[in-house]
Amino acid sequence: QVQLVESGGDSVQSGGSLRLSCAASGFRVFAYCMAWFRQAPETGREGVAFWQSDGVRSYADSVKGRFTISKDNAKNTLYLEMNKLKPEDTAVYYCAAESGPPCGSWEADYNYWGQGTQVTVSS
Image 1 (tube, rainbow, N blue to C red):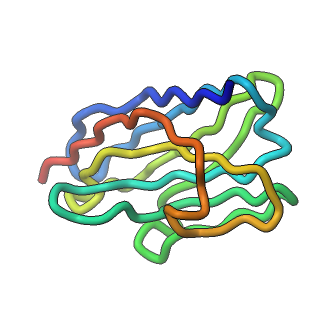
Image 2: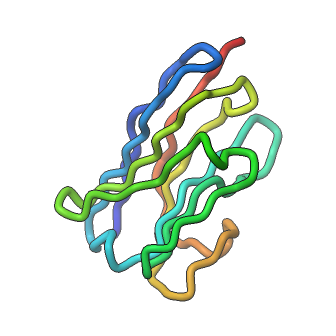
C-alpha cells in the first residue's frame, strides 16, 4: 500500500527558509516519478518541483532558483528545500508519486498523494 506523509510546514517571515519532507512507504522513491505540488486558497493545484525516475529535476518558473527537490533513497524520503520564501508561496504543499516513466507535470499525472502540509509566509 502506497503512503506519502508530508511534514515540515510552518509559518515563516518573508525571506525565510523551510524544508519539507515526504516519507514514502509501499514503494521505493528511486523508482518512481516524484513531485511537489501546492494549492493556495481558491486556486487549483500547481506543480512546483519534479523528479523524474531518470534523475532529471525540473521546477516551475515561480520557484526556480529558490526551491530544490531532493531524495534520500536510503530513508525513502523526498524533500523540498525552500529558500527566499515570499508571501505568494503560502499554500498547502503536497507530495505526489506515480510509477514511471514517463513522468508528467500535471495533477492528473499522479495517482498517489500525501495529506499536505501548510506553509504560511508573512510579509
